[in-house]
Amino acid sequence: MSTEPGRNLSSLKIDDRARTSGKMGKRLGLFAASLFVLLAGAGAVYRFRDPKVEVEVATARGASAEQGMALLNASGYVTPRRRSSVAAKITGRVIEVDTDEGMIVKKDQVLGRLDCTDNDAALVAAKADRDTTKATMDDLVVNEGNAERELKRTQDLTAAGVQTPQALDAAQTLVNSYKARIALTKVQVEAAVSRIGEAQVAVDNCTIRAPYDGKVVSKDAQVGEMISPLSAGGGLTRTGIATIVDMNSLEIEVDVNESYIARVKPAQKVTAVLDAYPDWQIPSKVRVIIPSADRQKATVKVRISFDKLDPRILPDMGIKVAFLSDATPAQAKTSPVKALIPKAAVRQQAGNSVVFVVHDGKLERRAVSLGADRADDVEVIAGISAGDMVVVRGPENLNEGQTVAIKQ
Image (cartoon, rainbow, N blue to C red; front, side):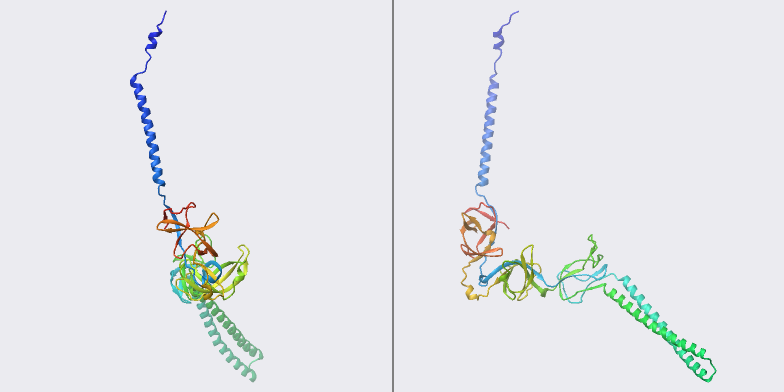
């Protein structure tokens, strides 16, 4: 049996329509890939055409004459010498609160009251015991008087030979017995009066009063809560009803490195600046240097008094202080310090100290000459003027002329 190869091979051929369809698919794929690359490139160009990064800025402050005399700088907090968490001497349930935050209170003013039902009952019982004992003593006094009269008659009859000596001894014994019982009853009355005083103290302890003139800074308990002089744990029992601060005792507390404590002395002049009011310089002076060092922090605690208190000064405010030298203001005016800026604004580039200043939304790179450190600030001798806005936080790769946005 024979086959015809020529006939079979001639039947194998590609349709022209299939060849045309394959070429068209390749062209569409190449066009889509090119369009994707073009759009990605355009997006990248638009994204990085004019980058605007956010930065945090601070205003350079002028250096006053007194700041030029600073020997040492430190930071701390405003603290009161007298701060009290006012509590009751007994455990009880609060039935009345007569205070609120910000209220000015006077010494012995009522701040709140506790449930005193049990103590009131104990006071009534103590008074009843006193009255009962007094009534018993009155009865004994009457009987003593009668016994003395009987004794007098018995003595007369015995002298006349009518009564025996035994009768006289019995009458005398009765009188002495009444006198002893009266003396005992007097002591019992005094004991009852003492119990009344004790019960009255317990009743008075239910009323919580201010220990001194001051201002309420915290309201620590509400009506219905339990308070106790001892912590009961679990957060169910309060230990105080309010916290009072003597606003006339506000002072500054700072920690000075023990390496520089020799620069500080009692009554030394100090300039203080509250973090809340950076442009307000408060005259102060050293009140006391605590005669003990903190071995963990290697610091010595120094307390500073304000020359004059102000309502803007509040407890626990952050504050920076400069311990001043004895130089006169005229001598200090020759100081070359032009401004104060935060240390965080200074960057090191090629071994030079530089800062970036924001002007009309763009960065200006300025080389600066620095002076001494002042706590978190540093003196600028040249390169920056008071009022300039310097970058304190931002990306590391900032450049001259770069557009930035100030972070609010």
